[in-house]
Length: 280
Image 1 (cartoon, rainbow, N blue to C red):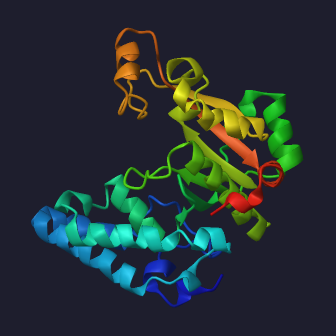
Image 2: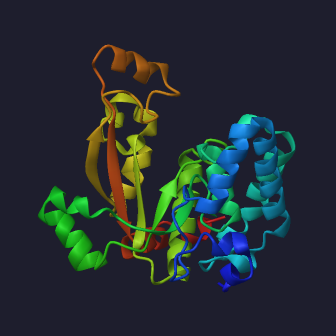
């Protein structure tokens, strides 16, 4: 880990005063304002400028600028992701090159070291668990105050719609092992967290083939807390499943978003019990 932000103005603009990365969706205000003004005048030219910026970041990308320590199993994933982004730069439609589009923001975040590839998802350094989790009761308070002893930093996990090759049972197992290695390499990080519709316990009945997404980490000590019901079907739960869409239309299934907190000691212990060398 180096003081890369001081060398690279793109990286310096995306760090807080302590040198920690800002959230992956954040764009330096001056850059965003300039791009939005450009888009208002000429949408095509604005897309071209975003394409050029991504190409420039790709050309200058180096793991020496990483803000967290990267174990070998994680470093090994970067060539694949950089090649995927290179393909986007060369062939993606103009609609991809948009600072308000999530896939572009996620690739921009990877190239500015605010996203770390771990396989089936990407880890966002410097994230935190929302304090509202304490409303879940004494068990949540014990987890966060007595065991975690703080709400940040955590690695927050995010799926990427353009990088889903490892989104399967074997891919997630390897991802958990890489996350354990990432946590061991960064002892100040308290664990991992994420929130998603696919952590909903109702999937055990509605979509049993996806039950592993909650069952495996839960067996490894992860804790889950209800966040919200998705009464409008906007969480992504209906996007790829005619079955879930049909049940939703019939009023037999309402997606729920659940928060996962998997503390470092529990995840590392799970990895050691289940063959830590599988993080490849």
